[in-house]
Image 1 (cartoon, helix red, strand yellow):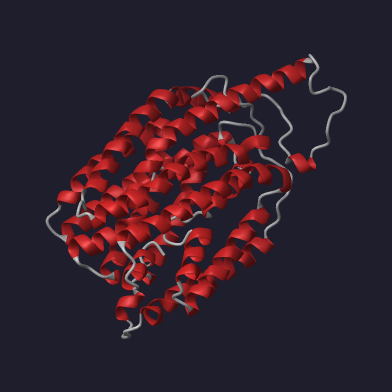
Image 2 (cartoon, rainbow, N blue to C red):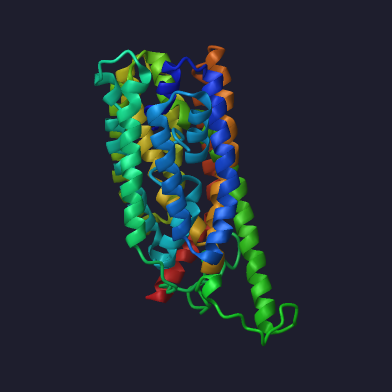
Length: 420
């Protein structure tokens, strides 16, 4: 869908502003879902929300196979998030996925494990991008006939994912227990033992009234306050990155098409190579996190990737632009696993769904604005400006990320040593 959605709408004679507008609407709806999913998944479990996501995607893909009606496509884009590029994750339902994964991984191992999960998602996106070139080889004058096999494939994949999720069991056993950071930017202490079961599985301790002055209640309030500050800090940093991603991510296929006059096969191949390389760099970033720290590895990769993005608009032809985009995308997106690991480590398990939701929401809301801005700029002939703005915003984000969370790496190393 990253390859084909915007190009399909372009074939249906949608304007750049219309494409950007509906993509922004999808981001806003996703943002509204994110917070609810995170909070509710802490209470009733994570699997139900991933099942809902797959069913929504399945229905949207089937509907898009049979009609070009505007309202049907808008619903498919807005509800299922088609074309936004979820990096192989479950869109607005990814907080449930990340919280479920973090539950079974020790804090000290989350960087490599989340990076592996990120790599697997991007390998899937590489395969999907190659499939996205199918419309170019179908001889038909009808856009829906050319793009129908792609929507059908999405439906089949969602059905398969639903089957896999139904076979998974979500239990109430966590592999580790961790308190909140002592200060913003510090890793959780691993020595404190807390109840890590979901709220629905915990037995309420009525021996300590909520508002009592008991040490346990007072300690819980202090931990919550530190968690809240940590989540707020991360959300504030994410705003810049979210806006930067929204300016180019959902419309990059459209930009390649207009800038260099290429079709789905060429764009799909480029994105596929980029996503495949992202899988490799994600694994490398997981290894790098163990050597230089999660935060520092994210910062340096982001600086390099943003610098390459700054040069992308000035490439003279599609071949040069493709090479630069592939390298830049792999470096930049490969940090996603470590960034997710950090957000999942800022709170205890009982609030982890909330933490991952706040992290995702702070990205999704500003990114929702981006496509509308870019769509209008494209229509006005300012093709390169959104890419330049993306590079500048992500460089600023890297500086803030290191400044606020840089101390996390040192404390995380000490905590890992104590755990061993």
